[in-house]
Amino acid sequence: MSLSYRELALAHGELQALLVGAPLREVHDDGAHRLFLGFRIPGHNLLCMSCTKPGAVRCHLVEARPASPSPASSFSMLLRKHVRAALCVELLLSPDDRCLRWVFAHADGQRWVLLAELWGRAANVMLLDADDRILGSMHRLRSPLTPGQPYQAASPASPLHQPSTQSRFGSPSRRAELSSADEPSALLALAPLNAELERYYRTHDEEENLRSLREQRHRSLTTQLRRLRRRAAAIEDDLRKARQAVQDRHNADLLSAHFHQLRRGQSSVTVEDLFSNAEPISIPLDPALGPRENIERYYRRAKKFAAAEAGILERLAQTRSQSQELEAELAVVMTATPESLQLGPKPSPAPKRRQEQARRLPYREFTSCTGKTIWVGRSARDNDALSFRHARGNDLWLHASGWRGSHVILRLERGEALDEQSLLDAAALAAHYSKARGDSHTEVYYLPCKYVKRSGEPGRVSLSGAKVINLRLDEERLRRLLSQDAEGEQRFQVAERGRT
Image (cartoon, rainbow, N blue to C red; front, side):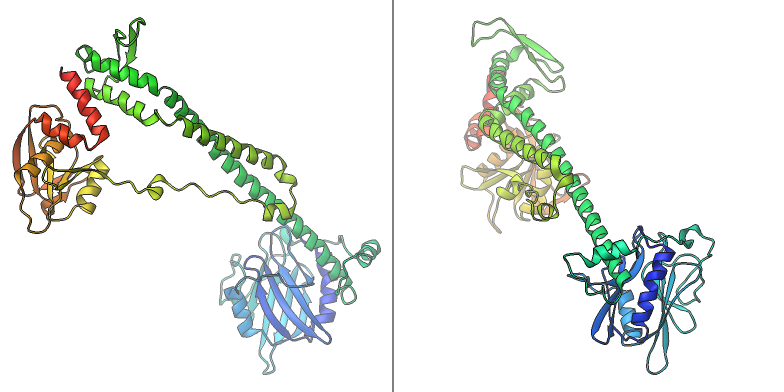
């Protein structure tokens, strides 16, 4: 709670008796709401603090400066320039509001005024020149004050700074309590009321800091716990899919065996279970996909999750254990001690992405029959990265004409001649990794990479001077190339079974 007018008047009486005539030796602040002025009197160094924090506005002597003061603000630097080393010649308290007026004078006669408005949420400290013009302020000036213009006092009728005759400090019982405290106070003999204020607000600030630390930790724990619960739900979904992997592969094999029954647009198909004596089985399909794509979808899911169950269970147990630890800490965080909050375990860093642990390349790599390297893009975004970040200008770029599909790069050294077999290998891959897969004849564009330009969204390009090769499906060539890639070989086998 902020100081009332009566309490400020009592503190002002002690400050006036001690500091008028004392030189100002130091000025610093905490970067937020506290301004510290250091004075030298015979036998003592005194530190006076003006605090503008809403709910705790005050001015009194303190035992010591903060342990690690913040870098000086521009206002502190302004005070050091004009007021440091000056004598405090007057310290006045306005009779109708909580406004302290420090008057400083240098040996050459220059005078400066430090004005502290100690009320409400608009509390502020300002530096004025001898003509009461505002040179600077600790916070933004209230309306209608502006820098460079004369200071205007606020209306004394404002309820924000109406004088109060009540005082919580200065009673004999509180003075006796302070005198008998285990911690000796150097201020007690010089300024008993200021010593009482210092002790009271030090305790108040410690309680506020503790409450802030607890609330901050509570928010952090709540956020972490919410994230872990979402992670656990996703892992449980992966576990369900992993346990479904065997059935997915079984469904894919059945669909391959009954390929002749499949049509685009079907939402399910009922087929005879050739691998057991069970009754006919109904297998869900994606109506938007064709027969091959539905089969490949089941094979992909089965491959992805087949060997993952053990790892998924380990991740799930670890996530649940972390959640339990956070729940236990969350239950007691609002009663935790400052030591446990400041020295307690910090949140574990987020796991590195898979790309950081093992860099993912945007292409599949093949080798032609003559030993040349062929790269095939994995997706539209990967196509963009392959063609414009990994490929070189002299490499050969290929793509199935009129079909969506992968960008293909045939790596060529500068001045190296293009051989026919490598071109046919790269064209076969361009046709296979496109929507033209399985067609008996496919036209494939090819040209040097330096003549390929971006055109709109990732994966879209414009070509300049492209040539066309009319490619006939060569299953032996494809089988040789796809044997270098397990996933591609599996897809080719599925397509073969479908055609037979």
